[in-house]
Image 1 (cartoon, rainbow over the protein chains, first blue to last red):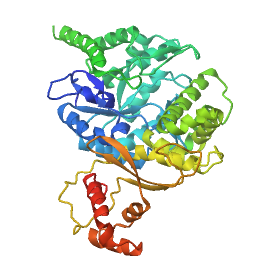
Image 2 (image 1 turned 30 degrees about the vertical axis):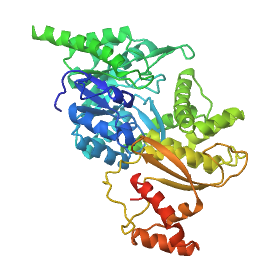
Image 3 (image 1 turned 90 degrees about the vertical axis):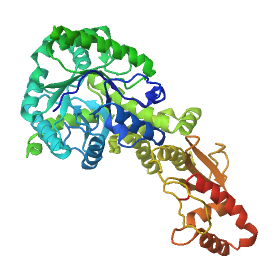
Image 4 (image 1 turned 90 degrees about the horizontal axis):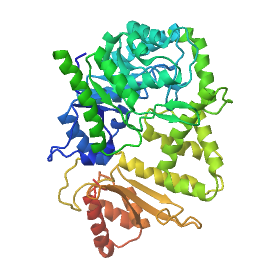
Length: 278
Length: 235
């Protein structure tokens, strides 16, 4: 898989009015899109999306393929997904180590899989099926989980074994590592160190909040990136020279607000790469 | 082969799903987090897609019934990978159940509200406008809604039945979905237009069938049809 370079930002419809090609408004090095939101595009966004897709590289990060389900990924959906990826020449496609449907019931939430060898088999099987269908090597993201189903392996061993068996790349979500480390009391840096970092394709960061009701960190993608996640990003970028991007899916602010966060990320990224070069 | 071997894992997943969808009692707080997240996702999308319906739910204090309907829906129905299709799945689900049986206009209201989302999600028509002429062949675009309702959803006065014929379409200039109340003749004409005949032939046969004088009413119809052509309602 060819590497992407620079930093990325999640593309949201809410940004469209602020993206003005005539005025040279802010654009990230690349955009990440959620394909489920762009396979069928609302009519008033169609032209602008075409313009955006023609000016910066796109990568796609899906949420409903349900790789850990008891059924194969939906063929109709895969067809539409492949059309989108081919049409916009999107090389990178990623999904989650989770499932969102079961017995074909779609719950639109990323649910935790049992960390067992048999689950590695089924995930690998579905990953290969997806890769054959899409004609692309895919990446899989370490997901957040608030409840742990049965485990035969530690989370990092499970991920490493899955990467090895499936041949997939890892989309390393640093925020998810941080959220899980607090919710399940482990050391985030040690966790990252224990992953097979050679297999990482790129990096995610996002915001989270502490929910008083459930007494847990919730990976909401609805707030600005937290200090600890920035620190963990710095730590990670010291270990691997790969592109990071910011996800924002809820409480979407103006693009100019995201631009500030993006520039903060870019500064961390550039500092790290300039140190490397020196 | 692999799938048949993972019975234990699938049983665990199934049990987990049954808890978070409200089919079974939640055993742990950490499972309850998922129940909360899943329900809120569905609640936000459904209440946001049906704002008038949800206003009525609140005004008539039907919140518990609304919640129950969402849980039953989650347990049985949603199958699309696309969130934007969830409201339509809920609409169809509600139509087949006894929820909100006192709201006689329930099915029609949900149909009306969903039509806005449906029209927004259509592919943009790339057809170039040419000169409108009665000698040309036209048909009703499949990107419009032409519907007869028993209630007036334009005024949202739902106390009494009021038959309306509604034409909904996306206005490319205003960049919004517009609804117009049309008369029964225009409704029937638009339904009957076929591309196998010229518009003039369509109009003539329609008028004959409805005992209308072509000479007397032609002009009125032509003015409206020309406007609808400009809006790509007939194409």
